[in-house]
Image 1 (cartoon, rainbow, N blue to C red):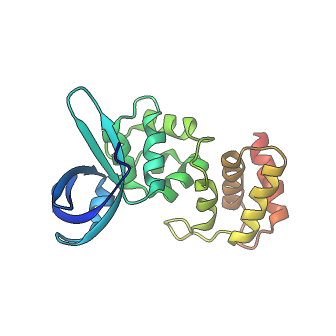
Image 2: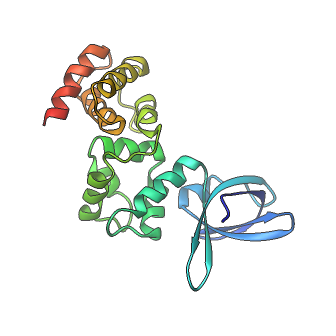
Length: 204
C-alpha cells in the first residue's frame, strides 16, 4: 500500500494530478483545495496517500497533510458519505475549519459543500462529534475562525480543555464544549470562565 508520494508534478486536471516519481507517473485523485495548492508542472510536491483497492482498479487519493487524510477516513465512515462527497467537504473546508464546524455543530458550514444537503451535514456533525483525529480538537482551539471573529487566547482555551479532560470527558467532546463556550464568551474570557461555561454546554 502506498502511504506517501514525493516527486514532481507532471500534469493535472479537474480532480487529478500525475506525480512523477523516479520516472514513474502516479495518477492521484485530489480535492479541489489540494489541487489549487499544488505547484505548477515541474514543481516538487509531497502528498499523503490513501490507497483504495477494488476489483477494477487501485486508486490513489492524495492529500496535503496526514491530518487531511485522517479526516477523509473519518468522513468515509459516515452514512451516505463516499469518496466524492468526502473530497468535496475537504475541498471546501480545511481540516481546522471542519473540526471547528463539527465542534460547534455548525451544519450550515458543512452543507456549504456542493452536493452535501442538510441531512448529510447533520450526520457528519453528529457522527464525528467525538471522533476527531488525535490533536485536531486542540488545533481548532488554536486557530482563528475563518471569519476573523475574536476568540479567547490559546492558553486559557487549552487549559480549559485540559481541565475538562481531567474530569473524564473525551478530548473531542471537551474541545467542542470549550469551542461553544468561547463562542458565547468574549475574547477576555479566563480558563475558569471557559470551564464553567463548558460544563454548562456538556450538561445540555
